[in-house]
Structures are given as structure tokens and as C-alpha cells.
Amino acid sequence: MLALRYVYVLALVVWLGGMLILGAIVAPTTFEVLQASAGEHGRELAGAVFGSMLARFHYVAYGAGALLLLTLTAMRVLGPRPARGGVRAAIIAVMLGVALYSASWSSARSMRSRPMRVGCPLACRLMMRGAFVSTRCTSSRRG
Image (cartoon, rainbow, N blue to C red; front, side, top):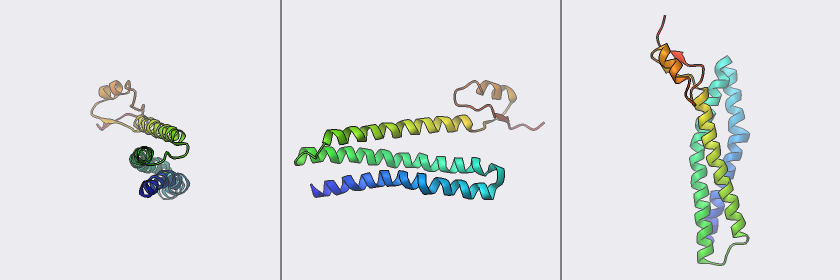
């Protein structure tokens, strides 16, 4: 029972601590350094770098959330019920829902903001009608 509590707390620390570190340290530092070194394209580059980090962290969040629900359920089944277990499970479910929404929203937004490189202007115009394609579609042909 004690081991389950430690796993529960460790998963919670990894999830919440990871969000705190990403938001308070990694994002500002990434944007500051890349804007200073890459000039006008630094902000776009920093957004791409941090977006990639955030996409990878979403998998950590999913794993931590699943582990939290699993250990909470195991604590309910194996021993005395944890205090406010239903409230805890509801909060974890909401956090997982927000993480899933955040991942889908940020990936759709990043797809819309990326320039597409295609073979001909006609294909470019046709692809711009799609939901996830930017109007910054550029042709790979020269001339």
C-alpha cells in the first residue's frame, strides 16, 4: 500500500512538475535564446522547438495520468479507500481531458501555421482549401 502511494505521488510530481518547468523555465529561455541568435526567424524557430517539446511532454502527461488513475484504483481495491478518492479521480480525468484537448489544439494550430512546399501552384491552391493548411503555401519550383 505504501509503494502505491509513492508511485501515485511520483506520477503527480512528474506531471505537475514537468508542466511547471516547461512553462516557467524552458519556454521563456527557448524563446529568449533563439530570438537573440536567429534574428527575425528566431521566434518562429523557438515556437517550433517548444512545440516539439510540448508534443513529447504530452505523452509523459498521458502516462502519468494513467498511472495516477491505476494506482488510485489499486489503493481503493487493496486497502482502505483513499480520502476523497472520487474527487481525486474526477480531477485526474479532467486533467487528462485538458491534456488531450491541448495536444489536439496545438497540433492542429501548428499544422495551420506551417508553410507547405508543393510541386505546382495549382496543387498549392487546392491544398489551401484544406483545414490544416496555411495560406503561406509556397511552390518548390523556381521561376
